[in-house]
Image (cartoon, rainbow, N blue to C red; front, side, top):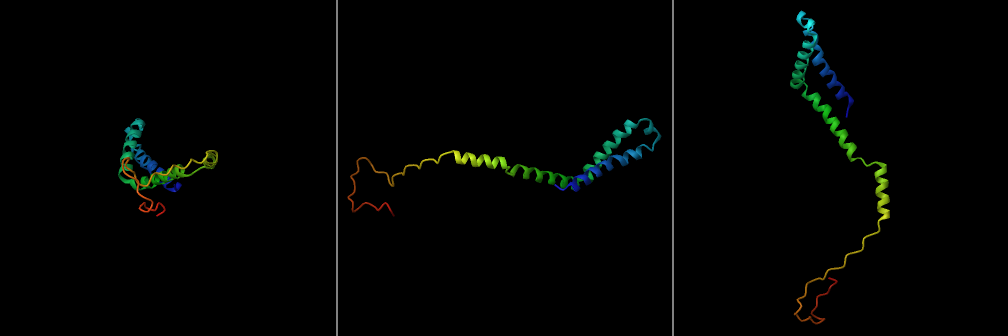
Length: 121
């Protein structure tokens, strides 16, 4: 993730709150009820960020998602060592017995040697 995109988005969100708050504080009524000015500024800032800050949000979140997938797919040294130790400790599995080439009916006569197919082909 590029830290620049996250910083840009954070600064723009702060500005989307602070500018309306500053404008609202110019009114004498809002100076008395500063908490009401903060609520209105938060609602205005949220609306502005939803409408105008989609691109910076996408850049910031795509960087976070890429960083998270890299962290998940990276194999740590401990995992690699554990896998190597497990592979060395487990014995090799025995080979499975070979299956017959063709099933033979129990009552069918056996073919003479000359007519039998070559098993090596």
